[in-house]
Image 1 (tube, helix red, strand yellow):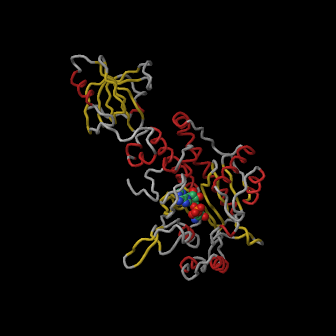
Image 2 (cartoon, rainbow, N blue to C red):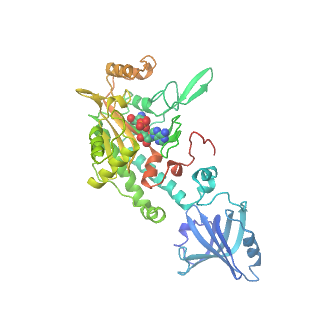
Image 3 (cartoon, rainbow, N blue to C red):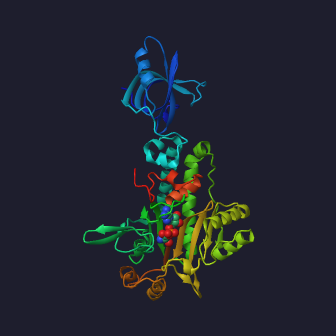
Length: 436
Ligand code: AMO
């Protein structure tokens, strides 16, 4: 038997016998000839069956063939420039229906996202979706490669926690034998633990959970968090430098491997950003958008989504850049573990990274002096007793350190100009979605 060839590899073969397997995308059942478009994980090809006495059996099978069925076909590959789909065609010799699909497909391309998610396994058959997850694979692989080349250690922190990892808000509580546990909102405390542990530089790509009841295009209740934490920094500037290098490595790989296909299927040009990315202190950013006609609602608050869009538009116009670091956030809107400015305790050594108008990441230098850390925790209404396991990390010697957390699906959404993280999450989790 001829071995299976992936459809993307057919074009490089000479005319002759081949075997292909995949699912039926379309059937054109004509009087004199039948056409089937067959798709697999790598592409699509046209299969042809001229109706003759010899091919009557195959013809009958094709007439019955439902869209979506998985089939294996052997036949003769022929290069023919007239064939629109890739200039090749397979003339069918045998057709084996391996798994039949119910003929009425529950979704179409114009079905609402919510219904498409109900049938995600069918939705994912679209070539655009397949591309999104190949891009994600390349992006993650490039980050990992960069980290490994730069001597980072990969860690896997537990997702079952005894206490909140970010704040008491948006916390999932689960029964845990006689007591309670909480799902990790981020690996924050335990990636920091690697610093007194003497690991130097660490990273993790893992799930994080937030009991966030909102239905925006950028929030999920479970998401993949990309985290890094490094020792011996002088300020958050060092964290931003590492963050930039990593993003450049990720997007360079994506552009090289998928740039042409992303342009063709999604109409998006991938730009590898130049370094350094623009940096604007938050207060200045708010002033810039105010001068351009939009006042961020609360003076003491974070940028709101409209503010993020506007500052991104300014940066694009002014610097031709899709990324901007907003820096030096007020201590009042940052967690207790962020280090404050030397000489101005109202500001933190922290940043948010905005990509195409949406926050993708938060980073900071951490406070490593335990007395200050305790004081800042108390200031935020936290009980140092409850945090004692964390505060202990800082009592036995610890280097200055910092890091960031970045939402994977936000990066992919903004990179590929998708309307929602639902489109780029393999299986989305939200307040009303636990299936499939
Ligand atoms: P923060 O809470 O800002 O910071 O989260 C970091 C990044 O994670 C992503 N993110 C989300 N993505 C989808 N759905 C959500 N509900 C959601 N919440 C957050 C965003 C966000 O920018 N420990 C700090 C990071 C650090 O300082 O190292 C933290 O978790 O892309």
